[in-house]
Length: 231
Image 1 (tube, rainbow, N blue to C red):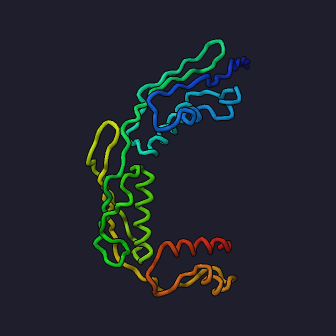
Image 2 (cartoon, one colour; image 1 turned 90 degrees about the vertical axis):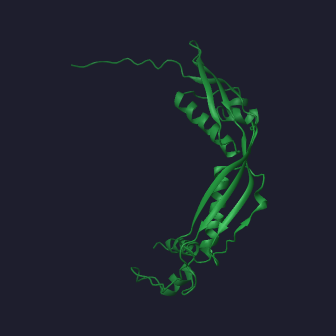
């Protein structure tokens, strides 16, 4: 037995318009480009609409607002109206941007002498947006300083509490604590498994000094250089 299926693709659904309410931190033209690329928007053309790409583009807009410091941003509602004759989609959504989160005070705590990180208040960061990316980069800055001073197991713990809050801004008291671990010296460096490459070449590429404090950043950089040799 056989069966014949007739498939009619119908009309391709495209974005006709996108209306976003509640966003003030990002200019309206940039908000539009999250959904309709600039070339389409100003060239008189639209772009394909699907429920999946609408969700992805909405999430990218929310992530962009989080990246500006609006950590409590949320989608309040969203509606889609598709014209039956043209299949063009009109999108309406409302976003609760929420308050912007900023660093009011920043404290660094370290009980390990020699790690290159002192316990202090860092006033240079007051007023910056308290974002996940800022948190990550500052954490890495502290950890890498400990790495450079011979603490390969260093970890950084962060805590944050709101000091003041209103409808427009949340001022955060942020503390980073360095947990340095033990200081480690680099012992003997040896190479195995590649008899065809000169040992002097390998040492030169690795570029670390034996009996100095172990810096994992330097070791990782040396490993990348060795990989460049095809090892």
